[in-house]
Image (tube, rainbow, N blue to C red; front, side, top):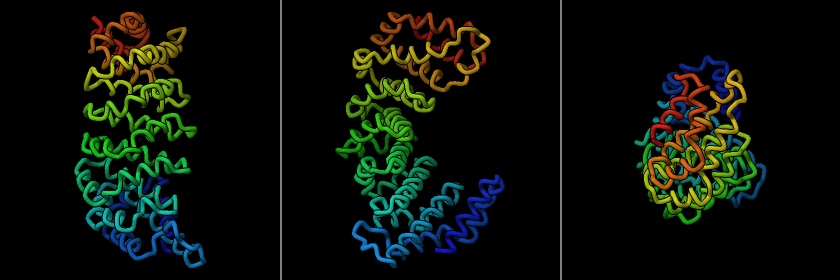
Length: 342
């Protein structure tokens, strides 16, 4: 436990100083990932029925420190993430039921590892499916956790599991609680949960329309998130709404009935400055860019195109074209939307 604590503190200090870019080679040569994986396989895993005696508490503390060090190392470099898989790390997750641990910090560390693997490459998708078959039910349980940190990390994990392809879509659809809980978290009181839930919904709609029916109830909370204080959350919500019509016309009617197009356009309008000299905030706001891009996606469908004409979207775009530099994304996306509305 003491050794893990020292290593974690040293590694965190070095990497935060900006001098840790080459540490992955040293960690790889020293076999840190293999050693930590072996330690976690030998230590008693924190279980929900632990008695809580001194020995159990010491084991939980040691296990938690080792899992934190392992997740920190894996997030440091793709090579170390690959070594985790090579040394049966995914089998460790399943055999020790670490996503169902009684220790929230361990659960969060394991989510960080899975999320990183999913983010790095789609080549890890089949291995996650094969070696961690309980992942879908485990994610559902964590989405309902009392820990906001765990809920947010679970949302981010689902988002990254949908980053490269629709490989997991069918499995999400077959897990009864997963999508409803994810949608519910779009209205969570915790800002991080809202941000990552909207990210996960967006990615779950990006590659194919397979989950469109299940995701339809997400449309009203996503529209509300267009007014969120957090810029990234607004951008995620705007992107998710665009993705829900990206692959099919099926949800256009629902979008129109819920006035999603008006809400997206209003997000843009509210950030148009009264004078061209105050346009920096507009140009820097990612939610404005994504809202315009999503409106462009919607405009390819005749019902949405008619609605955009009715709410004078062209006039808003013309204003943006006039006040924004030609090389800015806001200008480019405004021009794109104008062209699609012709």
